[in-house]
Length: 218
Image 1 (tube, one colour):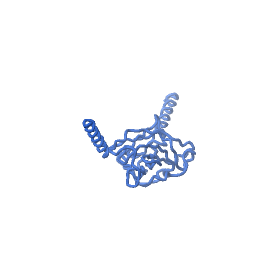
Image 2 (cartoon, one colour):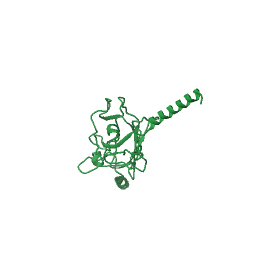
Image 3 (cartoon, one colour):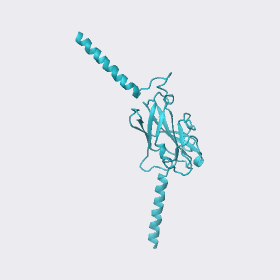
Image 4 (tube, helix red, strand yellow):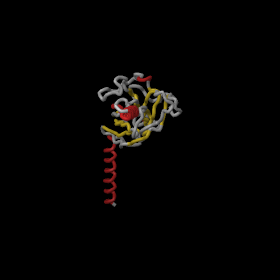
């Protein structure tokens, strides 16, 4: 092999390795907590310490209601940070509302990244030292129900935030106690729940009939 061909081959292999590193899956947890106001939630994507001082926020999350939930498809960029990472963006430790196995779930360590056949688990298996920083996206106008979570990466996602398990793009049930609305003793959610929408329609129809009869009587 000539010297020029060897150099070209080496550069090609280096480029391939660089791309593989940039898109390898390293986010190891996904969860959610109440957003501080009724009907709001923060979706948190967690990852481990990558040994760098340049931890950053990246990408966005999409939520859409499923299984009868009318919440429209909504994409929100990750703008919140929490954790113990070396970057000042990630401070304050683990978000308080993330309850492992209830509202917070993890990848497993082997094989990594996980195949689709590997379900998420409810306790941190401490892959690569365990999750120590999180990025969050705030959603509002939610009601209790099922939501499809879908991570939306940037064009060339870094190793820090690519998903470690395809099931992190999954369906999660967000309850009224998380949202702070739509349950006994809590305020009503801003958006009518699916079961109440037909009742509202019937009520409006009844009012229209009454007004029409009154108009004819006059």
